[in-house]
Length: 221
Image (tube, rainbow, N blue to C red; front, side, top):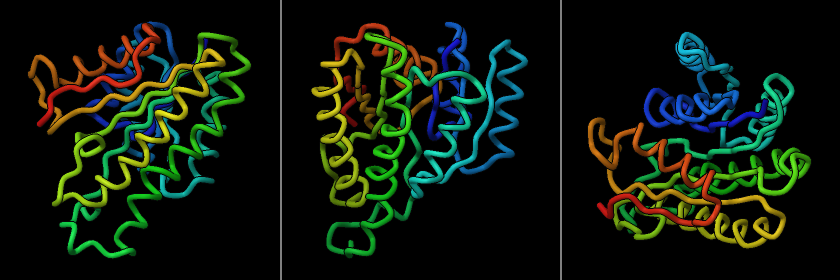
C-alpha cells in the first residue's frame, strides 16, 4: 500500500481528496499545523474505512515539512502522491503599493520554500516505486496565473510556485514522475458542479491517473 500526503489537509478539499484517494486504496497522510484537528479528521476517515494519520508541520519551516513526510512514509508506506495545497494566510494579501519586502517573506516561505522542501523529501521514495507511479499535485488560487493588485503576496509567491511546478513537470516527466497544477479561481463552493470539494477531488484524481496534463483551471473568477 502506498500513501497520498496532503499538505494543508482540512475539512474541505483535503478531506474530499482523502476520501477519493482512500477509496482507491491509498493510505492518507494528513499534514497541517494543528495535530488535534488532524487527529479528528483521521478518526472520521477511519470510520469510513480509510487508513489515515495526522502529522503536524509548519510549511514555513522546511525541516518541519521534511520530518512530517518522513514520519508519514515510515508509518503508512511510501508517498506515491504528494499534494501541496495549504490555504494562504490572510495577511499575505495586501495591496501592491502597501507591500514591503518584509511582507513577502511569509508568502515566499509558504509557497516556495515549503513545496521545495516537500518535493525533495518525497522524490527518493517516488523514484524507488518505479516509472509512472509518483505524482506531485499543486493546488493554487487564480492569482497564480492572473495576479491581483489587492493580493500581492499570493500573486508573487503563487507565480513562483507555478514556475517551479512547470520546471518539475518538464524534468521529472523524463523519469516517469508526473507533476500537475490545479488552479481554482475564486472560492471553493459546496454544491457547485465544478467547485465543490468532491468535484475538485475528482479532478485531482484524474490528473494523477491521466498523467498527461500539466495545468487544469477551474473557473477564472
